Image 1 (cartoon, rainbow, N blue to C red):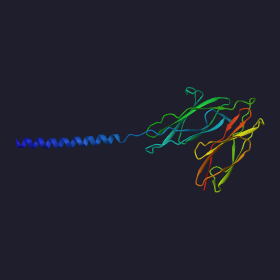
Image 2: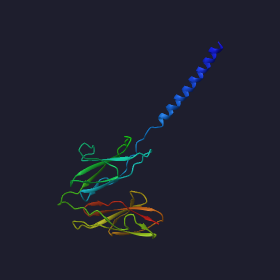
Image 3: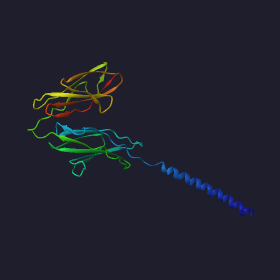
Image 4: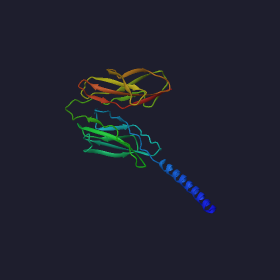
Length: 232
């Protein structure tokens, strides 16, 4: 009986050890789950933008991946907001891409992120834009071009003079809205000014973003790209 009792005790201990090991392996299995990248945020073109040309650059924010996996972006552009009439559906490693379009057409676009473990984010919001119609209708102003400060410039003064240029093919008078701030995209600072220069006070050790929107007196609008500069 003593031998049988001893064997029973040893067997129980061995069974308990096996149970603990199996439980540990189960916990480790759950730790390897891979997560999807974050949803990209659309930057440019802005929603309902009337574009001044048919060659357009698209921008969106970098997605983040918790595991540091390599990220690709799927960009979709269609002629309808259900994306059944698809014009482009491409994969790109960079958060920007250029496309060419037909004139006088409404387009819709969205972006999602994918990692190299086959995980995908949800799609971003859907935005629309319109390309400029054929000649004979009002020509919208030229997209504003940067003059000063240059893109990425380091500014040492406590003030800066923003300067840009734009023209209107019909000779219509133009007014400008300025978006400015430490966030990208920047927020509206002032609107409907006629001059193409504007002075602003600065703080040191900052990155500032700015954009100019040109508007003629016949509801033609051209939205410039986001520019940035740094202060020392």
